[in-house]
Length: 190
Length: 252
Image (cartoon, one colour):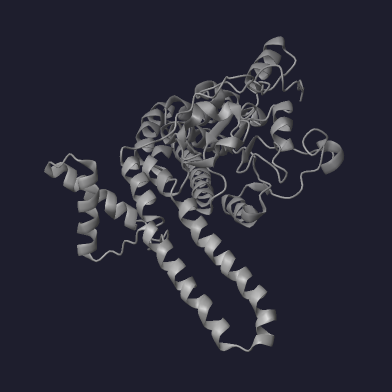
């Protein structure tokens, strides 16, 4: 069967059609009539992928919803939700999603002040039984616990052991403080 | 490969075979492939999820709906249109007893694709694709070898994220291709691309099921049509037209 192995020239269909017209190809291939009857939306012609230079950008828009504003505020105030996301369940509602739905409900009732709405949604969720822990509170709690932990070992253990233990204890304490500070910072941008 | 030309004995045989072959082309959706899927079923199978924006291929931009927090989302309306065309083409090729080859180089789904091909009665190649398999077939496979009439790509890229050699070779050998193109693939040389997710298991399971159903349906339709015309025989090619007009409405 005659073929023209030039995949960069035209589409498969155009090359076959021209070979038949020229009389080089005697038998119509099986798919020819089907392609004729139902052509694709774009003819499969070869194109060289060229890079974009300078400030040219693709014309693809970001997908954003009005609820994203509420989500951003939620995550900056409360950090990552306490309840883990269960992706096996298709109808799962996370803490953030419940918050957003409550916020929109209260907004429809007529409230306009954003901060008021935020506070009221928080109260409504706490009343419903959902745990909401603010990011600032978590930080102070952890620092307080570390302060109390520091004083105990130095008082109890003998001096010889202290000299070895102190550098070891200092390092994990510093790491804990650093991680507790980093976590809220890492979580606040939505 | 047309049976009419092979028979050649009676003009009647060629008439019947021409009728069998030309009848499906007159209907826009002879095999009713539209009922096999919906935009909702594509969404539930996570077909709309693409790769991150940095992996995007320039030629996939028309098929992308938008990007959500950096992840590309494929436009399922376009996917549905492309999928309908691709399934229709596959069905017609299977109806005409064409050889279909499933190609993929993704090891996660190679067993699934091989079982799908076995269930359709068609062929699959999910292993290392040797250089001249299509272009130098007489040497590699034997003297009188028929090349496939349609190649279906479930993954257009190979294991190093480059376009599969078979895409270019099929274009060289005048073989039409149907392929699932993700946001990092090049859809240029594929005859009937289907923009969609090729990485999630539910998505690939859905596509395998769709291809299997269409091919089986098309083959069954072919058996029905042949039986119908054999029964009608020499009396009613006129009656046969009316009969065949009734049969597509029965579905499969």
